Length: 107
Image (cartoon, rainbow, N blue to C red):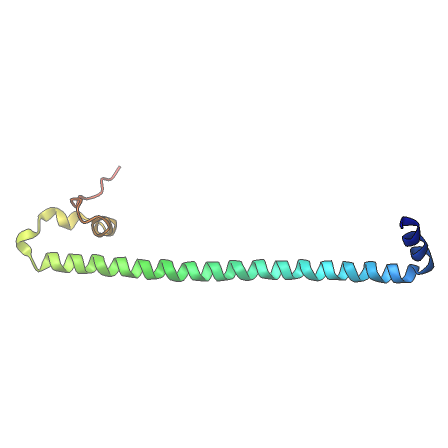
């Protein structure tokens, strides 16, 4: 069987050469397709994550603003320390409303 293949290869060398060239071209095409697909996947993932992150950020900012507004409507519940709270403190408060709101310590 190996001898037959060797004989055919020696009889039709141009067929083998063209087949090898065709396979090389196919490999090059598949590699390029893989590069394009990888780039597209990265672009889709990046754009999808940015949208999700931005949507979450807006939602949390809205909730924090509503929380501050409700607190302003109840001045008897407010304390002077609320003026010391940062935006992060307010976001932490809406993340876990059961925890008391405390200003972040500097240093």
